[in-house]
Structure formats: C-alpha cells, structure tokens
Image (tube, rainbow, N blue to C red):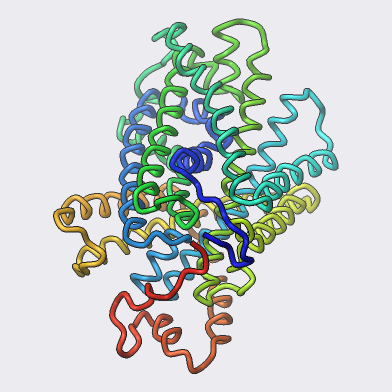
Length: 469
C-alpha cells in the first residue's frame, strides 16, 4: 500500500487495531466513573452490563459492515452508500466535530491530572501551555505516520490498562460488602436508578467504531475490523466493570459519593498512605495521551473519506505515511482554539456547551451506520448480505440502532438541541462543496440525490480505484 505522496504506509495488525479501540473507549473518564454512579447504588453495575451488551452488538455491526466495504471512513462510507451524499456528509461532519471538540475537553481534563501528579498550583498561562502540549504531542505522533500512531497506542494502552487492572484484581482481596451500600440509593425504583446511571455511563463506550473508521489502515480489514472492535470493547468493559466493582468494595459508600479521585481512594484504602493519588494521576495522564493519540487519527479519517468523494476540501484526501495530515492539522488547530477560548475568554459555559454538542454528535454516525445495515439486509442486495446470516445480522443491526438511539435519549434535551443546531450548520458546507462540483458529473449529481447514475448498478461506485491500499 502506498499513500498519495508515493511513500509506503504500514498497516495496523489485529493487536494494534484492538489497542486503538480500547484506547479510544477508555479515556480519562474511567477515573471518575465509580464516584459518578455511586449515588444510584450498585444497580449501576447492572447498567454497565446492559450497556456492554449494546456496545458489543454495535461492534459486531461495524465488523459486518467492514467485511462488505473495508474502506477508511467507516460510518461515513456505509451511510453514503446506503442513503446518498447528504446522509454521508452528515455522518462525516458530525463525527469530525465530535472528535476535535472532545479532544479539547480531554486536554483540559489532562491538565487537572497533571496538577495532582506534580502537586503544582493552578496558573492560567501554565495550564494553557500544558493543555496545548497535550494536544500537539499526539498530533506530532500522527504526523510521523501510522507506525508511530500504533506504537504510541500500544504503549499507552498497556500502561493505563496495567494499573487499572491492578486495582481491579487486588481489590478483590480487600473487598468488603459493607462498603457497597444498597442496590438502589435514595428510595427510588430500581428501573429509574438503572436508567439514571445508564445515562451517565452511556458515553463510556464511544470509540467502538475506531477500527471501522480506520479500516483502510488495518491489515486484512474484512476479518480484523470486526475482531478488533469486539475485543477492544470487551477489554474496555472488563476494565470498567471490574474496576468499578473493586472501588465500590474498598471505599465506603458515603465517602465514595463525594470522592474526586475514587481510584486513588481505593489504593489508599488498600495499602494506606497517600501514594495512590500519584499512581492513579500518572495512569490518568497516560490514558488521556493515548486517547488523544487515537482520537487525533479518528478526527482525520471521516474528512479523508468525504474528501475523496468531493464532500470535503481536496486537501483532506491526501495522506502521508498512512495519515491524512491535513485532517490532523485541522483538528489540532481547532481543538487548540477551543482550548484557548476555555482558558482566556472568561465566558462562562461556552466550553461546557461545546462538550454537550459532542455527546449528541457521537451518536449520529452510529444511527446512520446501523440504519444502513438494516437497509442492506431488507433490500437483499446479494453483495451486501451473506447467506445464512440474515436473521442474526438483523438482530444485531436493530440492537445496535436501539443502543445508538438510547445514547441520543441519554444525552438530554440540552445536548440534543445544541447538537442539532451544530449539525445543521454543516449544511452550508455541504451546499458549498456540491455546488463546486463540475456540472457535467452525472455520478456526483446522482449520488447527491441518492439515485444511481444511468447505466450503473447499485455497486457501481465501488469499482472506483482506492487512492490508498
């Protein structure tokens, strides 16, 4: 495989693709999750189980879709092929905005953990410099090519997985059922507590699509995208569930609900002293760096695929050493602007509103991709549906759609309202890009309306040569 600049590109193997999925799913939020769901009681552990089933169903759907169309862009590719250019653009635009806005949020969160690690005081100037460094170090790794992206992802995933798994496993020996509290707290029904805790936990699994989004960079994507998606999701679920259970059983419930560092409190409860805070802060910084490394790559993949189809500027379609460098640069710059606004503008709530947008934006590509799978199955297109898999694939697709719909519902009214406004703002970009196409391009015009050009079958566009791979 060669890039658009003629240089050879290295592809991710199954271990690296799995690490990409795990690294993107497990960001910095894991270190606060036990305290976030503790007020609802141990029913939140049941919510984790339900969500894991939904996330695995979604991972399997992405695996099936990648078998049939193993191109970079994942959800964008599937939505565009099923429903035309406009649906594809909405998927790409929504995913793109989600990645660089959430990268800014991750960088700001990383600064907080750095304070715990170094014991330093807060300073707006220093904090801004640290946040920008957290954004640009992963960007530099991406500029170096897929080989370095893979190395950073493997190392960071192992380094953050080990301490979290250590707390989960060792916590079994210090587990005290008296610390758990009741099944439901506050006297509410268990179903209400289940839904409330699930709403907080829902976005813990965003990132399950990472292997599908980078399918063009995965070796043997027809097989490995699905495997990496499922293995990465299961690995993240093990860390989430066992880690939360361990913290629940080692930290007294009344202390846990007010904790700002639950994993640190768990280590302190196991071994005494206060060194647990430093250990967990280091793991959190590594976790956030790994997530930023993976999400920086993800932020370039959807624009890359859309640019190849004339729906994003052409510069986004060029690769260097396996990485769409224009997309990486654009995401790093935009995330940096948001970070600077967060630290210098002094306008309360601006950054929080943008973060709310990401919670909705993450789900739009999921809904469109799972709907595309349902469409392929219902229309019975032979090249899209494997014999003997119809019932199983339909159950998975509907389950994945339901899980994605639950994500939207759990985002809340404010997130959906702000997210829809931001999504609709992209329509002007779509109109601009489509209007700039040559008037004599019948395939582009047909794709924009979702219709096939004259004399073309439903799979005609797949015959176009791939720029890479």
